[in-house]
Structure formats: structure tokens, C-alpha cells
Image (spheres, rainbow over the protein chains, first blue to last red):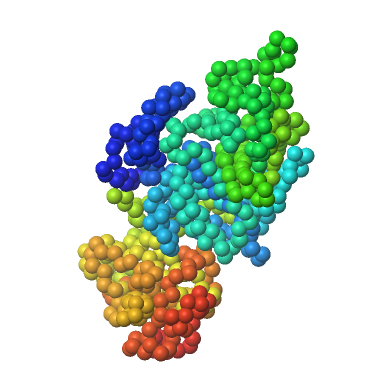
Length: 407
Length: 206
């Protein structure tokens, strides 16, 4: 990695106390320094960034798996689905993926893509990752064998899908801790896609800004709910078994289910903290199960109240979402969205629920079916977009993403 | 400061080529092949690309570094996709608009120096593309040096909206053969860039 560009004259000590560069040097931030330290001290696995700046952080593009899945989750992400132009054939797909892979490799290294007209914007990679996904039509045009799950999900009663957020032939998932980096990478990749495909939809998501919390803090969605507690940990055998597909051209790849889920903040506002926690099965305040003390505690679904009811409702979100067998483990890596409202509303907010698993049918669908049948949270949530992509494996230097399918 | 790695880290395309200059690939190349000085000369090429085009004019770019001990001079280039290829330099005229013209005598690269071929600067001009160059396609450009040695530069075709400098004939004839038709007309820059091969390049045939 190249040396980060540390501007001189900023207080290193202050920056370290703040666990990151986001608030470095800002007078207004100094007042909260003490609180931040206290928060960090109580976090389960604090991994504060003591360098102060993370603009120079890079992740490897080449490897067995694509980046952007097991790599640390970023503050920003753009999911962009493309529709292939009529007449694009297998040879054109190979040309497209060669160019896009080269762009991604260079941008992730913190340098301009080939023929980049704004290479200066690439020099702050900020943990940029670019992840490509293939929809059913891409695989069909490529002449490959599509996994049986590579299709729109079955319709669920809870769905109110808007075609503007559904499906797609090629996914570009561009993620970084800096939104300028994301914008530039997206522009570069889209310019190089233009001869082959058009934009079908783009969904931008965000989490806490880099440095606002110690890395590894479970995100809160815009309901205020701690969201993603029981995720498998990248680097573990549980994660590898849950995420990586091992068949054919997908060996080393995975699948992505992206569900745009609207959170109805207006009706959620009507629910008191006790009701909110009851719906989730966890305390909103700290994410601990209603039967436990800390976020990481195992929920006790058998524990009962004096009146004989289970403490955690059988139709609470965690009771319904919990895998009933090891096959149902999925890896969630979602983002919030918050876009201008339409009509009379004051907000249009929700979750870009992104789930990775080796097999959609075996792992994801049973969970989604249970949630569709009963989940107290359904009262305030509505899936409004749905897409499934095959995420091909990574590639080696000299190769390109998709070369196991197109090579 | 942050340094941009340009040579040590390679993408999937346009990988660095470290090449010993080889004898010109002509039928009677035996003599040149015995040229010890040429064989000892090395160059490396990175970031080579060619602007896509349906037909007519386009250009190839890249960075060519002289890794040898002696100066070398790039005097000509050739490619299968255009019968006529020229070495061009770009300069600003009195009004600030960029124009390009043939580089007399070619480009000399001193030992350790890099010739940067880029939009808005020096470039290899493909004057008469007859088959479409599509995005992602590989375009091979043969570079010829003053010694008679040649080296292949593998480029990747990329869509690019820039590199629309006005083309100026060798001897200051500004009245015809513009790549833009009218360099001050921005609409035509969008629509007509690189498409004006016309048929008036007789003076440039090699």
C-alpha cells in the first residue's frame, strides 16, 4: 500500500481519540471526545483506527473471491443494475467484463482507470470495492448453465414490488468509505458499460460514516434497530460454508439477494419503545435479546413470563428469522437508504437488504417464507424491490471477472 | 504525498511489456537480427489503449519507457486496423484551441525516459479505420524505431469522448481535413469526432 496522504498540522492526538478521520480537527467535535472514548470502551470488539485517515486503504481486487463481500463493510454503497443491449453476444460480454475488471482493479488500487478523465478522484480509494453480479439473462447470453435459484424470487404476500427496483442483467456494486470515490468509480464503470448496456436502476445506501463508530459495530437501521447481530464472521468456516458456492463456473462465487425494504417511519413513530422491542425480540436500546443483557447473548426462546407467555414472542422478528437448521445461515451486508419522498410524505426510507449465500433456495428462501407468513415487523416494513444475482468468483491477474463463464 | 503506482501494479489489461527490441520483421531481417546494440535495448510499455471508432480517424495511447542505455527514436507505427498511421504531436494555437500535426523526425526517448502518449498530447494517429474498433477489443500497434527495430504494443479499445483535437496538415494548411469539421462548433465535436477521415491523406501514405 502506498503511503496515506496525511496533511500536516492536524492534531494527531485528537484524531486518535476520535477513532478516525471523519471529525479530525473540527472544533465542534472536540466536545464529544470523552463520550466517544467511553462508547468505544464498552463496544464488544473495538478496533479503533488510530491512523486518523483511511483514504489510502485498499483491498485486493484479484483473488479467489470478489471483494466487497468478506471485506469490511463500507460506509457507502451503490448497487447499479444494467440491462444488456439487444445484440450483445457472448464475445461482447467478454470484452465488457475485461474492460470493467481492469477498471475496477486500477480504481481499487487508488489510481485512475485506463482513459480515466478524472484520475485525481481515484487517488483516494477509501477501501473501494467493486463487485460484479450476473442476472439470468447475462448467464443465458453467455451460454452458461444458470443455477436453479438464478431467477426472480417467488411472489410473497407482503411484497409490493416496484419494477423500477427489480431484477437486472448485470450488477455493479460499488462500495467505499468515501462517497466521492463511489461516484467516480460508478461514473467510470458506467462510461465503459455504455456501449453494451443501459442503467436499469441504481440504489444508493449508507451506514455510519467511517470513524463515527469503531469498526465492526453492528449497524442500526433507520428504525433504530440493531440490525445484523447474528451474522457469520468473515474468515470463519461458518462464513465460508454459508457464502461460497462450489459448483461449476460459480466455484468461489456466491449469490446476492437484494431486497429494497421500505420502513414506514410514520407508523413506527406510533409504537413505544416496549412495543418496538417486543416486535423485534431485542431491546431497541442496545440490541440485546429480551432474555439477555448484551447484544451477543443467545436469545432464550423458551423463557416465559409469569403469565406463561414466552418472553420473546414467537412472531417477533428474531424468532421468525432465526435459522431453524444450519442450512439457513445467510450473510447480511445491507445499507440504509433515505431518498426524497413523493406525495405528501416527509420521508422515504428503508433498507437495502443484501444477503449473500451459496444457494438462494436452500438458505434464503425458507427464512423469507417464514417472515412473509408471520413477523410482527411486517406491520411497518414492505419489500418494494427484489433482485437476485449470481456473484461470480474473483479472478487472477491477467484474468477478468466472469472468465470462468466467458473464458 | 500519495504516489500513484503506474508500473508496479498491473491490471488485467495492458500489462507491462518489457521487450527487447527485435529486428524488423521483414523477409530479409537476418542482418538486423545480428545487431547486438539493438538486442540490448529494452523498453517497457504500460497503459496502452486505443480510442474506439466505427471508421475514420482514431488514436492510440500509452507510456513507452526506454529501459536501455542508448537513446531510441520512435519513427513510425503500423496496425492492421488502419492502413495509414502517423505519429502526432498536439499544440495549442493562438486562440487556445488544440491542434495536432505530424511529428517530424519521430519521438526520441532518452535512456530512462518515458514517452507519454495521451489525449491532448503526443499520440499515434490511426488515420483511416475501415472496420469498427469495438470497446474491449485488442488492437495491436507495431512500433518502428530509427534502428529499424520494431516492437508490438498491445492496446485495449476504450470508449472515450475526448481526444478531439483538430487535425492540421503538415504545412500549415488549416482549411481542410479537420477532424471536427469546425473546431469551434461543439455540437460537431460530439457528433463527428474522429469520423472525418475523408479521403485526402495522399500525402501521408507510407
